[in-house]
Amino acid sequence: MAAKTVRKAPPKAPKSAKSKAKPTPTNGKARAPADVVQADPALFDPLTPGEIADALRTLTEDRRLASMAKVGRYRVICCEPLVVKPPHWMAGHRLARVVAYDYASDRAVDACIDLDAGVVADLQLDKSQPMLSRDEEALAVSIAMIDERVRNKLVMGDMPQATLHYWGRNKSDVSYSRRSAAVTFGRNDGHATLIAIVDLVDQQVIQVVPAEQW
Image 1 (cartoon, one colour):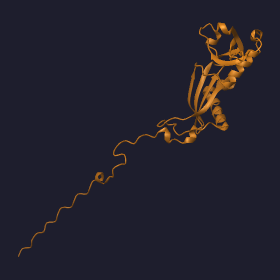
Image 2 (cartoon, one colour):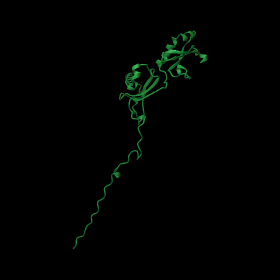
Image 3 (cartoon, rainbow, N blue to C red):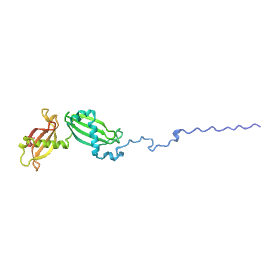
Image 4 (cartoon, helix red, strand yellow):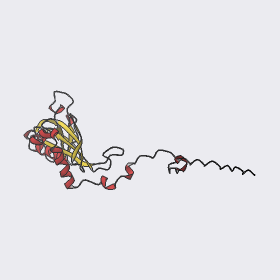
């Protein structure tokens, strides 16, 4: 009697890797980039005296500012923390923004200092006029107070009221291209009587104008 032939079932094909993959939590959507709200809160803290000193040293040691550092005729307007958003390569770094004015070259300096790496990460040099620093305001008042033309026109009760950043409207004015300040003198009641224009580069009064003609 002939034996029966038993046919074996063909082996099942293995499941593909795709079928075993688990769905991503984002359901296939691209993950959103990190936001600044996830940054270390310490990056927003005010700069410490040591960090300010490090930022200024790093700035003045940059070869592009060698002439400014050598002459030493510059004023630091501000030195403050700076935080950048992802995906910028400096996101998460402790940064400082330093704004200064170079009197020797009549130019503004705006720099970003990477305090973690100890380098000038970004530097902009132009002829813009940043706001006056506290030191410049005090200097302008002291220059105006000792000028004979100003002292001769002040009356009893006149005192410095305000110091404003000033630039002339006409190219013929010295203050048109040179860093200058306007010092307002007046009485305690707020009535202005005299305006003194101070050239901060040469540290001298270049114009004295009655307030009513200003």
